Length: 518
Image 1: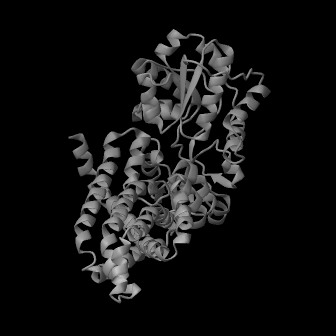
Image 2: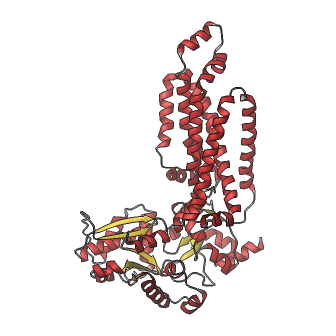
Image 3: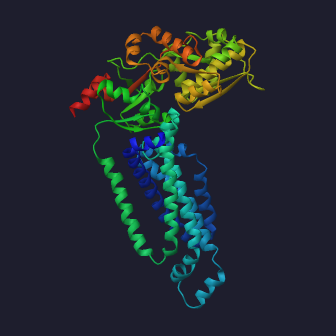
């Protein structure tokens, strides 16, 4: 019932994203069919080159989908173009290989008989080889189509839309209904397209010309829609993570608080900063301790109406774990106040921009701060430390692990890269992890969901927020917030510095006024 209610309440967006998903699949698969079938036919006439060409195309399949999208981002930007190129490349191999194999497996005695009857090569191809190879070729097309529908969900990470939008939001928030709102239509779309192609297969040769004309017309119409959507002038384009789009202290509350409306796309956190650096978006949702802000010459817009609360980072530990291993508290207390905003920016920058290993960066910092940094993670762990899926969390988890191992007799295991606050928090409550680094503002607004009265009472005061979160987490969930690491990593809207100067935008209110003036 709850799932059905979600479908009803989001029916317009689900329909829109389903159409977007279908368009991406249709364009990329059509291009793959045209290129794959024609190339496969040519290769049957040049068999010596076939293995090399198919081998090169096969290599593309080994590239992880997200990595390929990341490679295309600087060249093609965000939106449908890189998604279409990536999906085309992934759909190409089964169509190309099956076309070549289908023609090659036609019985040579049949083609020789056709030649003996005086049929030219073109007629042999169209009237003998293709009819016999159609089942194999269509098997490749159907495989490619179904696979493309699935891979197209990843296009949401680069602002292309599609049903992956719901899936990634749901993963970030651990919302099963939201995940199913993307997964069910995607699965249904794959089944329907496969079924439709199955019905078309017996008639394909008889209806080849009208099918080609129809496909060409549909392809041009869909492609024109993609081009026109990119030609429409946009004053400013924003790139937000899936979690920021949905969570209580993210974009929905920011819109209401500032009466702000931005044309936004959803991006993978790792691609977001590259997108603004490459001028593919103009505004992003970032974190104030991210080292790429200074490195990429970006500016954090002032939260002049104080919408975002303090986000001081601190270890959050299960009460049961702390009672079983009381030595954890004094061990982690050694990190209290050791990390300033500037220090955290530097550590993040070394990993994000300079590409240094997380463990190396942490060990360097701890050595300079007088900590022992021996690492010996073997055997069954006593403590499992979790983290969310961005650099700062990896650093903090590694830091806590090294300090615990060198200050106690406990063995530690890291379970990092958990997708989003809700997943980390639920894993903590269920005992899948024992502790993870969290932020007081997130605890206040997302985990505890403080009401307006509470927000007015605690306001922007660091200690008041921490004490409220500490007290309520203990009472409601038997979780302990230990003393903060010392730095405040707030959510923020970020723009390129050159744009803030050119448009005279220094605060979020300035951004609103600029948009209203257009």
